[in-house]
Image (cartoon, rainbow, N blue to C red):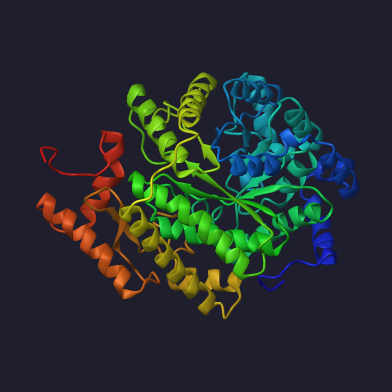
Length: 487
């Protein structure tokens, strides 16, 4: 089927569904009958429905807290999620293993068996497809808060079928954000089309009175991503999802480090997503935001790592992000223990609770940064729609082919990889090398001037060394990668 940004007909969706469910034996579960799944989802109480809980938090102006976590053995995964809920998580995740992310279900099955044999996790997440609907329902029923699948999957069609039928009322990802930062050889045509199916499934449920949340992955590569690039991609994925009938969307952003720029990014993300959805006939979609705590290198010292978590939480709360994804003090070591994950939740929850009645004040500097991000996003969106001749899906593919939209440090061969970011003298993320990024000349001049000011302050030339130093700066206890700490 030729890729277009149009809603799949019910007949097209149901015909494709037969192929999707045949990918692995758990796809033949009787509970995947859509009428039975709809009835089950309608029986779930509101406090365990992701979409409804987010909408309530947005209305109340609260920032809710969610960790990342997942282990392969069912009862161990349940114990882990119960521990995280007891630590204060408002939502719990099920991070999916890497084999499932690549649709390699036989290897995932082997990993489950080896985890039993060796009495330790032999997969880096929860293989939901292999466990099937009944086991995934046990996960949902074992906790008192909503459950979300988090992964990194270019083709999440069978995964989406199983988790939603099991009562997991949110699925993270999208055809761009779960391809470009995660895969090398998967085309955008393929991944966008796969995620149209995932979104059409949610639209099917919505048409029958079931609210399900969808969340594009905002941070992308998580390393010095300029806000306008990540915001543009989130808006694109929101529009693609809404076209398929999704009515509850959470758009995300990964912490950059400069507080003003981060607050501006969250505010403009909410505003522009709402604006673009209304512009294209989707004004009935509820939009919320998610702020991801620092995604780059973490300090090795636990106290410093905890301080970074607290700073992230402060920015999330003051920006009025609806939700925040937490980190742990063990980020520089490896996979965290449940105790470290719980401590990260408690630290984050304490900060956002203290700040729940406060908001970052308006200022001329904040207004300038918001205007800058909005202008850059509009440039990128205009270019995407122009080369797509009005079709968003086609435009995304062509814009990536031409480098008009370009994600720094992404592994995908379908990403130009010519954009290089660097911080300015105040720590804002700017662009050092533009490649063919679709920015107007006045926008490019501002970025060049900001970076030149920093280079002059540090008495060194404008070069790629700025980028290198910035990548490692936070893990070395600074935001800006300055060569001379005496200044």
